[in-house]
Structure formats: structure tokens, C-alpha cells
Amino acid sequence: MAKPELMDYDRALELYEPVIGLEVHVELGTKTKMFSDTPNHSGNEVGGEPNTNIGPVDLGLPGTLPVVNEQAVRYSIALGLALGCEIAEVSGFARKNYFYPDNPKNYQISQYDDPIAFDGEVEVELEDGTVFHVPIERAHMEEDAGKLTHVGGSTGRIQGAEYSLVDYNRAGVPLVEIVTRPIFGGEAQTPQLAAAYVSTIRDIVRALGVSEARMERGNLRCDANVSLRPRGEEKLGTRTETKNVNSFRSIERAVRYEIQRQAALLAAGGSITQETRHWHEDTGRTSSGRPKSDADDYRYFPEPDLMPLRPSRELVEELRATLPEAPVARRRRLKAEWGFADQEFQDIANAGLLEVVDATVAAGATAAGAKKWWMGELSRIANDRGVQATDLATPEQIAELDGLITAGTVNDRLARDVLEGVLAGEGSPAEVVESRGLAVVSDDGPLIEAIDAALAQQPDVLAKIRDGKVQAAGAVIGAVMKAMKGKADAARVRELVLERAQNS
Ligand code: ADP
Ligand code: MG
Image (cartoon, rainbow, N blue to C red; front, top):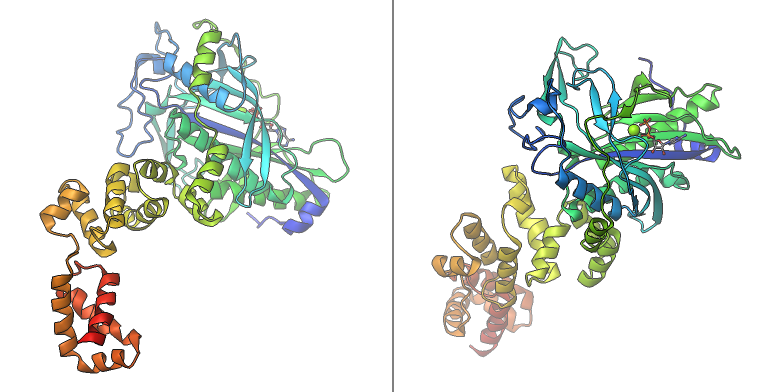
């Protein structure tokens, strides 16, 4: 494949207006699948054995009938409301017919012309603080397909593979597909807007508790439609749809790449083919997938085995009343309450630790302390062990640890030992301080003893301090901290060293 021409990004923006449309699939974390009582283990979790979590309904075996999962309906309505959507009075299911080996029934039960939620708007804030309002066309319910693994090729795609494996564990997992209207006005920030939108959807979904929304596990998947409109023209350009870009960073890169690729093609007098495209993380490019027309014929027809949904207005209002604060509003509030700089705050959010820091502050920690532990020591240990920081400790434990520092019971270094004990299951922070004997010596008596001994051993340092060279005290402080096995408040030791040096 010849390397496709790319136009300089700024030049592309001078000539064309980028327009995007985003389709986000969210796997709902219900107990069972969308239309059956099969447990909802999507098969995306690590370690799930293939084809061990399938029922007759999921496979569409003769004689089986689907039953709508009530929890999935509640989650979908809540999600629709959080997206600012109207909730349909009547909303039906339809069969989307197509043959593909990951689709055991040869049709997917989806929603077509009457989605459960429609006409919404989501507020999205970019890292530089620019706010966009992204219009939502619809959010509809459907079931997920199985998962294909193409073996033998170098790319993991079907082309060049020797054979393919199919795992139906995911077949029938409840999904909501959220579709935006075409998004205008992002201009040069369009790639960032695309990524920020998907990350906002993740935050909304997590705040609602309807999905784990982990992109790397496929709980949240995004297809990015991109087109270019020549400046001054009314008509939208032809779009491409880049499939399943599975990180925020890749979404940004893929959209930027498509803008540059399409601009080069159009400027050279070429035309854009309406097609799906694949994103290649390694090369940072997209490549042609399959042609896709707006009139793809899926022979949709109403699902004859399911009644339309008529969610009562009481249910809708009940769910509306339980909606959490919108993520963008919540971030604004937390940033102000915690007093962090934009970047500090963004780092916490990017690390996925906003919730746990918030919970730790709520449990009594200082904001600075909560941030320090979760972003520092806990993240480092989690990284070493290949787990999530949030799996290591509870907000309450960290708040207690932070409280011990604030109270002067332990210093920073001892606190790390306390944490080690807590992570080793030795009990609460206070219990670990007790059992490991980690409290700092708050009584001046033993400190003065150690200081006098250290000063006696380092008469040259003593002389320097008396000469006013107080920075020389470091050596004595170090010796004292060592003698105390770290169990002293270094600031207090410093005070006492200076005092003793003058008075001894
Ligand atoms: P499909 O069946 O192709 O996936 P959808 O309606 O589900 O169609 O999604 C199409 C997405 O593309 C929507 O987000 C829509 O707003 C967006 N879109 C439609 N036309 C354009 C265009 N010309 N440029 C960019 N995005 C577009
Ligand atoms: Mg679509």
C-alpha cells in the first residue's frame, strides 16, 4: 500500500470545515443479558473461557423467545435522561438482518425508527476549558454480537488470517448505542472534541453506574464519522466511519488523520468513498474497510417476538430524580473545592482517580493528601502489580492514613510503612501504627538525647552551626533520624538541633 498523501493540518483547516458524527456503544452492566437469563459476563473480562456463557435464546435456537431485561430498560432510560434526551412514550424493537459469523441468529435485535431516547445534548469541556454542546440524535437499545478472533495473520484482521475463532459469550449483552447529530464548529479542535465527548460519555455512564465503561475492555466503543466541507459550501461532504477506535488518544489521532487524508484527496480533485475504515494504532493511519451506503439494506422489520416498550411517566420521573450531577458540572465544583490547578485536576481525571479521590476527601482526608496517595504511592504499587490503584485500598483507609499525618502521629516516611502494612492486610492504619510501633516520638526527651550524642560526634558541624551556617545542621538531623529509626518529626528535630547547638 502506497503511503497516502496527507495535507498539512492547518492548511486542511483553511480549505475545509471538519464535521464529525460519533457513535458510541456502551455495554450495560446488568446481571443478565438483554433478552435472556444468561449471566451478563461479556467475555471482555480477563480470563473468561470462550463459549461458556451462552444460552439458547442468545443463539436464537428454534422455540426460544426473547424477554426484555427490565434492568437494561431502566439503565437505558437513565442514560437517555443523563444525555438530555426525551424518553419515547412507545419504543419498539426491530430485527436488523445480516449474516456474519459473530451474529448467531443472523439478525440483531435493535431499535430502528422509535429509539428509547432521542433529541439530547451533552456539554463537553476540552482541556483548555472550551465548552461545546454536542447534539444527540438518539440512544437506542440493542444486543451485542459475539467476538471473532482472526488467527495467523500479522494484523489480527481477517485479511491474511488462516482461520477465525468465534466466542459467543458476548452475544446478547445489552448495549446502548448513542448517536450524535453531525457536530459542527469544532474546527481545529475537532479531534480533541471527539475524544473529550467520548470521555464525557464514559464519565456520565460511570456516574450513573450503568457500565464499567472501560474502553480497553470494549465496554465502551466508538466509531468516528468524519467529513470535510469546502469553505463556503452548504452541502455536507461524504463521510468515512472509522471503527472501534479504543482509546481517547486514538480517537483524537484517527480524526486528525482522516481530516488530513481527506483534505489531500479532495484538494487533488479526488472524491471520498463512503466506507468504514480501520484504525491502526501502530502506524497511526486508517485503512479502507467496506463500502457503506446510507441505504444499507438490513431488511429491518419489527421484532415479532417482543411487545413495544411503554415506559410509564412515573418510571421516567423516578429515574430522573435519581440522576447524579452532570460530570462537567461536578468537575467544575470539585476543582474549585479542592483548589487544584487545571493540570493537576486533569491528571487525576485522566488517571481515572477522580471518584476515589472524591470519596477519600468525603471520608475526611485533605484534598492534597488524597491526591498525593492515590496519584503517588498507590498508583506506583498498582502499576508494579498490574492492578488498579482502586483495588488496593479503600477511601476510608487512605483518609485515616492522611489523618495520622495531619495529627502528627506519623511522618511521610512512616506513613509509607503504615500503608505497606495496610496493603499486607495487617489491619487499619491505626492498628498498623500500633502493631508495627510506627508512631513518631513526640516526646522531646529521647530526641534531645540523640541530638546531643550526634552533636558530640560531629564537633565540626557543631562549630559551623554556631557560626550561623545552619545548613550544616542537615548532617546532624540525618544522624538523629537514623538513630530514631525514622520515627521522629524532622522539622521538630531541626528546631531542637539548632537550639541545642546554641545552648550546649
Ligand atoms: P450508520 O448506520 O452509518 O452507522 P448512524 O446514523 O448510526 O449511521 O450514524 C452516522 C453518524 O454519522 C451520526 O453520528 C451522524 O450524525 C454522522 N454523520 C452523518 N452524516 C455525516 C457527515 N456528512 N459528516 C460527518 N458525520 C456525519
Ligand atoms: Mg450506526
